[in-house]
Amino acid sequence: MRDEPLVLGIETSCDETGIGIVRGHTLLADALASSVDQHARFGGVVPEVASRAHLEALVPTMQRALDEAGVTLADIDAIAVTSGPGLAGALLVGVAAAKGYALAAEKPIYGVNHLAAHVAVDTLEHGPLPEPAIAMLVSGGHSSLLLVDDLTAGVTPLGATIDDAAGEAFDKVARLLGLGFPGGPIIDRSARAGDPGSIAFPRGLTAPKDQAAHRFDFSFSGLKTAVARWVEARERAGEPVPVADVSASFQEAVVDVLTTKAIDACLSNGVGTLVIGGGVAANSRLRVLAEERAAKHGIVVRVPRPQLCTDNGAMVAALGSHLVAAGVAPSRLDLPADSAMSLTAVSVPG
Amino acid sequence: MLVLALDTATPASTAALIEVTADGLFGVAESRTVDPRAHGEKLAPEIAAVLAEAGLRPRDLTAIVAGLGPGPFTGLRVGLATAASMGQALGIPTYGVCSLDALGRAAGPGRVLIATDARRREVYYATYADGVRESGPDVAKPADVAVNVDKSAGEGALKYDFGVPVEEHLLYPSGAALVAIAADRVRAGAPSEILTPLYLRRPDAVEPAGRKPVLT
Ligand SMILES: [Zn+2]
Image 1 (cartoon, rainbow over the protein chains, first blue to last red):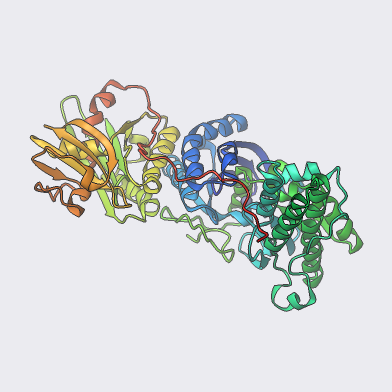
Image 2 (tube, each protein chain N blue to C red):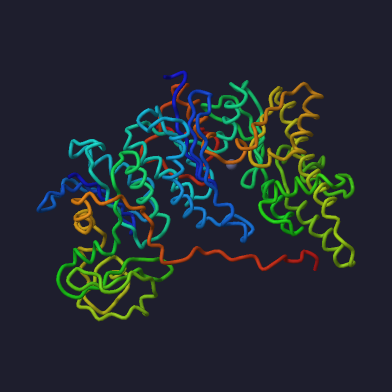
């Protein structure tokens, strides 16, 4: 059982209620309920709306996951749950439920780090991860570069966004172009008909002066403002806004910065594997450019399929399975929901 | 029939084991921690503790009764998520009870106001006559709560002055009172209920008014 543990994962850190079940590195079930439609008219995730939706969705989503995997809670070896980082109230619903399942079924519980889970999910698709690896996590909630020495122990953050997350920039730009929410897939689609070189938008924190303090950090707030200014200037001049060109040029600015810094992180750490996760990893241009630039340096890029890149329970189960197989001690029943959980611990110590 | 009672609608996290027989209720074990920010950390260990104290295991439970609030949302959901997940894992029914009713019932004869802290200088409240709810539950500023009662209970009544005596020993819902209210359902093996919180307030969220110009 140790090599191929049957692990259930619960994810409620943002607006997706996810329950996944894995056996070793094999995905058996990945049930998801999303409250994204309830947030659309607000242009972003409303924490209380997300928390309410999690509570409603948990039991039915669990049932779907168990049915899909053809197992019962009694068969499970361990339960893993996202302890943080994320929205405090949303995390708390998943953590409380996980404790209820663990208590009732008398199973060990692992409170795990959401970001580490985004990295671990790749093992379900591409097998064991060569360590060390560089992981780049980009979504509406995070934009981080991590050095992964040992996924069961600790992960070293190299850099993160100093303002907006990458996915947030997509949302904001989609909104100002009147394209809707969430912005990532919409911009990606809109950009296909545009010229990425038509407008020179800024690349945040890439100037030589930024290298000392912010070599692996990101900033997307200036880019977002630049897009807004450009669009407004057009509108004031009474000229039509070339939506596809703006989308393509904005997207190019984001993925240019992301891939440049990710490759730099690989090279400066002597690492040959780059894992990309988070919702923005589903961006088609990011995948192409990352592959292209990595290939020049012999770096292997691993990107899980889009459903595994966005938040889900499978990623939590994948990390849990890793921890069980490595003999890591489970967390205790008083494990907290920690909205600002740091990466120094991949799981809450027992 | 062994029943687990849970309530996190007030600053207290309460877990209790109550034995329900054909003609009565017997408290087996009860644990309570008062900390408005720690429901998520305290409740599960309390459940483990009452089971251990009684020398019982989760599989010995027949049903779970949970306080549906009203109460501050984040803490309230902890109790309900825990109750729902345990019920599902054990394949036993869950029953919901208005948390204020547990206090109203415990307050006994007479006309009683039950008020709990709703934060933002408001209270969740309901009124009772001889233990039976007459009005509410509702949420309002203390000054807007019209009372025609003899006494009050609940920590909201201690925090704000409603001009009537406060039963200071009745601040938080007890497991025994919660189970007493659901006892008929437990005995009848009534169908399991979806535990929907009594929110009484809508989520704070404003729709964006349109784009703010960045050029000035
Ligand atoms: Zn995420």
